Length: 181
Image 1 (cartoon, helix red, strand yellow):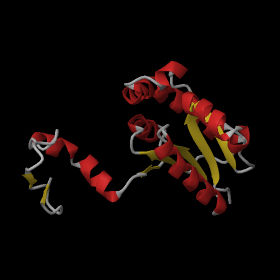
Image 2: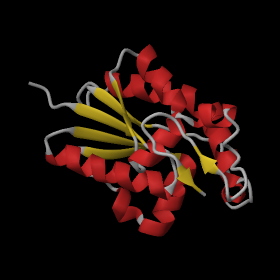
Image 3: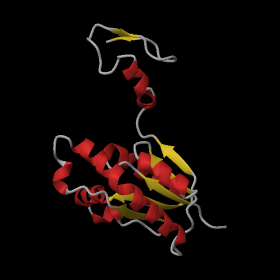
Image 4: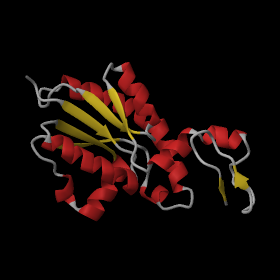
């Protein structure tokens, strides 16, 4: 039987990368072949901070990159997170689709069993679906953060976001108790 092959696609910021790297190591320890997909700008930054040895990989863990169109100065401006997200959404879908097709046709690794994407890599959901590869979404922050994220449109619709004055009591969505600011 062929070894399962998980392709992990993190969002390229430290708080998102580190948990995905930990998941990669866990999957590898459980017998998975793991391909860790990084954006080029994030890969450059990781090489600079963690060194080349951290990204060498092993026989069953490899690091690959997809073009994101982000230059070095873009990573340090005041709007860098917005610019990063826009660049990723514009530049990565086609590159990721091509990469997944290459991985599935390569003789150097098992066929892809599943794709594990970060919640913020929205384009990756569509790419995995088009290729018929099962996808799992990996949420790297707290359950409270997930609830707030899933309910953000409703919070905006109700006028709770942006936050009103500090003395306002918010009656939030069902299953979340009201609290005072």
